[in-house]
Length: 85
Image 1 (cartoon, rainbow, N blue to C red):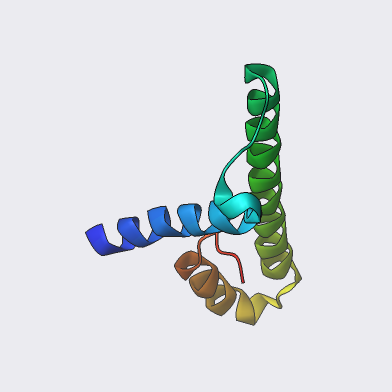
Image 2: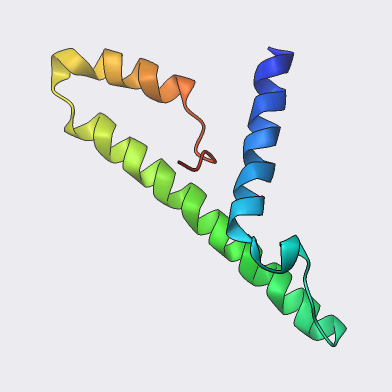
């Protein structure tokens, strides 16, 4: 259970690294306002990806035939919406 939680945390960090890969992952801003704006944009992109993943998984579940829903649900249960493939 602990390892699963650690993996989820690592997935969050991996996604963040993939979103912000330029400049070796360093923000270069000339002011605090620019830094906060860049950080907010990064968070927005991150949240959009997570939201899209939730919507995708929900769509798969609702589109599954009644006799396949349990199998699809079990697959979704093993997934984490922060994964980035």
